[in-house]
Each structure stands twice: as structure tokens, then as C-alpha cells.
Image 1 (cartoon, rainbow, N blue to C red):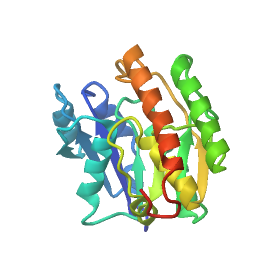
Image 2 (image 1 turned 90 degrees about the vertical axis):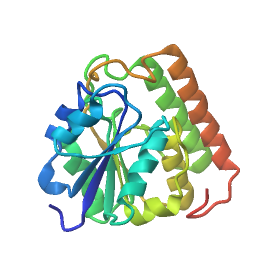
Image 3 (image 1 turned 135 degrees about the horizontal axis):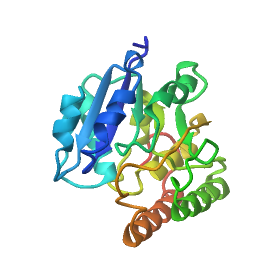
Length: 237
């Protein structure tokens, strides 16, 4: 395990078919603790995660941000130096975690996002609506906040002290963009590393449906503009 403890948080909603594969591919010597947040699943996600060796907690209020916040509350009593987030659907490649955390271990970054745009993508893995949403959101962030980004990808790592300062609050689709916008506003050292991306196991709850794509897109744009009017500086909400 790294001398700087690394914890992994995995939000999971009805990912029984994929969660064991995700957990099997995480480089365990690098990681202190893996927390799977069962976000009101109606299948056996929690049982599969526990059987694969993860710490499983339950967050009944559905929402990606709600699950991430629940995971953070769980580890707050004994926080890591670095917290990493990845999805439970096996679209990320957990074995690439070392490259995602390396800029943090080197002391050259505060927040690292795995870019699916600059990395190798399996054909059809990143759907057109997701590609367009990333393109639009990252260009707005550059225009409004001055930070160049290519992706709002879920596979990311951040310094625990810097994450606490960001006062994350979004409970659903705006979680990833909230983190990146707040990091840009606070002057955090931002890095992207290319990551591989493949077709997920099962159907996406967001980009896999028209209604999910519309709701996620609206929330992302709303978050970008809402935070523009907030008070600048670290720790602002």
C-alpha cells in the first residue's frame, strides 16, 4: 500500500452483474480501503460487493452525488490522503488507477481526472450525447473559469484536504462538474490523464435513456452557471 493512504469510493445502483469485476481489477497493494455505496439497489449489488471484499454502506436517497457524499462521510473519521472515485459498471478500467493517482503522489496536482476523450475508447462506449455534453461543458468551463478540460469523467482522484475545502454538495448529476468548477475557481492544480473506456455492463441509467440524458445535461449546465455567481475562493459553496 502507498505511504499516502488511498481510498476508493464506488457509487453503485443495480450493478450486480459488474461490481465484482470492478473490484477484482483494482490494484489492491496501492489502496487502503474500498467503499461501495449501495444507492438503493433492488438487486444483489451489495451482496456481490461484500463477497468481493469491499466495505459496503447504504445510501437510500438515490443520486450519484448522494452516494459519493455518503462514501465521504463514511471515511471522514479516518480520512485518506487521496480519495479516488470510479464507476461500478466496468466501463472504467480500474487497473489504470496508478496512472490516475500518480500526479497526486508526485505532488504535482490536487485533482486528477481520467480523460476518456484523450484515452483509448472502445467503439460505442462513449455515446454521442455524452461526447457532445462533455464538449459543451468543458468549453463553457474554459470560457467562464479559465481552466482547460476535456472530460467530466467519473474516474478521478483528489487530495483529501483539497476535497474538504471544496464543500461538495450536489446530490445527483452535477457532482463531477461541481468538483471541477469549484477546483478551477479555487485555483487547485488540475491535471488530466488519458484513461481507457469500454462499453459498460448493462444499460446506463443516464445516457442510456433520453430522459436521463436531458436531465443530466440540464443539471450540468445549471451547475456551471450557478457556481459562476458564487463567492470565489477555496471552501466556497
